[in-house]
Length: 561
Image 1 (spheres, rainbow, N blue to C red):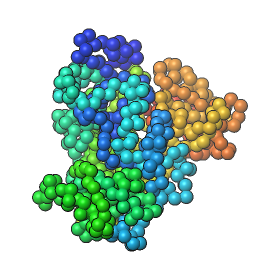
Image 2: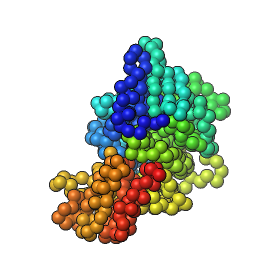
Image 3: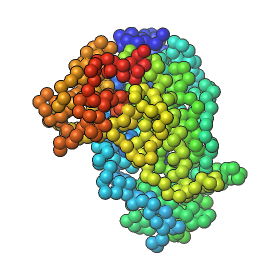
Image 4: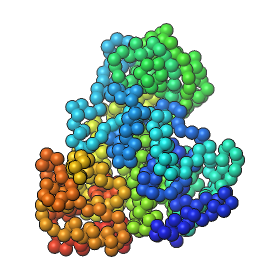
């Protein structure tokens, strides 16, 4: 049986420590890269005890996975790490555009875009913005916060085996430093162990999607003169298109540290060993257009772009997240962002089930919600690689490559037509044609600036540890009272706020904004928002029996039936 009360969970957490070689935790995370660390951070914020094991000795040392989209930054804002991430990302704070050019000599080429948020229009939708922070800079920030919140994170530790049974997961892990074995008993296991996931392989979960798309070798190098060639062109990435010397150039510090992605064709028999320092340096010189450019190769790493999505995100008590669940073309940084958002979706559901205020079925909604998002997003990532003519990528005939609409509807406007929601249309698209954040169930709740006890916050700052009900302070009704009674009756963490300028309102919108209209309801209606900031349900207007309507919604959303 799953522990369904906090008291039972605490008792189990204190058990099985007698000989120092056995550990019991509610959640075991396999993998300590971006998604595993994000899972640890989010679980820590929710008070869920867990252990994380990672076979590498520390966080990433390679500058990659740098684009953190606006939705990801919203999650990091609520988790109180946004400021530290911006500090870690300060070096590249002024880099914005994507340039495509034959070489960097002269004025040829074109900007695919100069600014990711021209005109500052994103501020209408979000309290934050995109942030360019490389994985090697971001991971230490997440690690530090997760540990300070009590996370048990074990690097240089590999999982040797695991068994998934009806009573929980038992895993055997080994310290790569001491050779010591530890048996870990957990209620649930989160597999964030990468695209070649041993956990997924053992479970026999297959993939959908076309598979491998292209291959690159990522080369880190030092060049002091390249900054003069680049000049004031502060790009995120520059696609260099000279035939036989194409590649993608990325700045690390805008001064002398750089990364170059060179096409690699193992399908044509090209071996990784052929990418010698001399070959890489010469390729970079020809791509840049400066024959005598100083180039000192400092490292190289192969990577593979693919489009795959696991056919299931759950098997028993094991749940997949990040690259173990999906692989995407790197163009647009969709993969890492989708993985971090997997972790956030999963964390509150694990907390709810473990703490006993949701039914076991809530965990099934993780697959129902996140897998369709990955399928839609991976297709968009591949299309974007075609649009940008990514080096090494030859899209299949008919795949296009022409410009498509912006990516904000993909990054921020995706929705959950089915899952832990009520009142949705299961047949509606996961990614709408246009960005629509108007309070529809299954979509991310609207952002409004409000005053709470005199403090200016975003409505998104309200959503993390509990369900939240918003109702109209101007229209007397029973929503506020119903929420308080049901929180006690169902033992559900549910906070209720009355919104408006009237006396008694807990939240006051700025500039007389019509909060109800922005949430798609009439005066007297109500909106139920999940801990992850997605609208779970809404009542378009007053209800004769608010207690019954709200109980029905909570029962459906939390699988309490």
